[in-house]
Length: 204
View 1 (cartoon, rainbow, N blue to C red):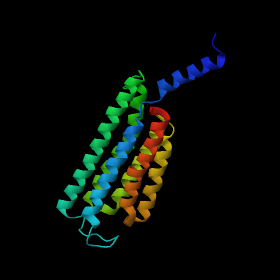
View 2: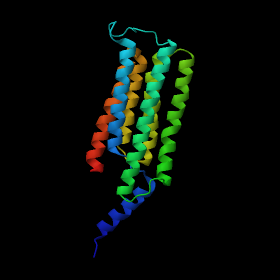
View 3: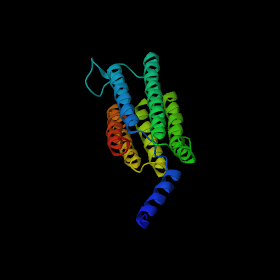
View 4: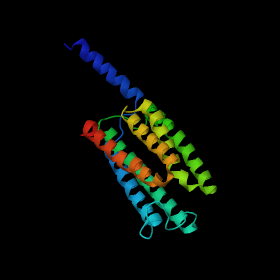
């Protein structure tokens, strides 16, 4: 005969699965961080290296060719990160016999992508106005807000990742010369750290 504590634990687990999207893959977070770090490295090379000291641009970002190249790298990083997250999270849900497309996953995606989409549109406006120094803080801040918002519908640890992105974004807004470094730390390093923690805690 099962103890009342066991039954309560099972009921709590069932309720959590029905209200929270628990199939996020830690490995996807690690890969997203690697993609972002590689993209930041490429952008750094194109903008700063090897002719100038840190903090001065070797080529104006207003250059049409450089804009196109940077945008292509950013889109590639985004597509790789989204694709990896989708495939690995779906695989995790299948291994755990959980439904991937559920009301919980839809609430999670909606909570995440409304701020992210707003940040993307605002970034386009910044590019249109040639205000490139605010691109890094804008993407970090809106992404951080999206993660904090979405943390109500998934693993609670994602909130800490969002707070980290938000702090880096605010710092980059006040010190735009460090924007690319903050972007690499937020989308690269923090994702790897978060993904590693989630992998060892939930995925193994």
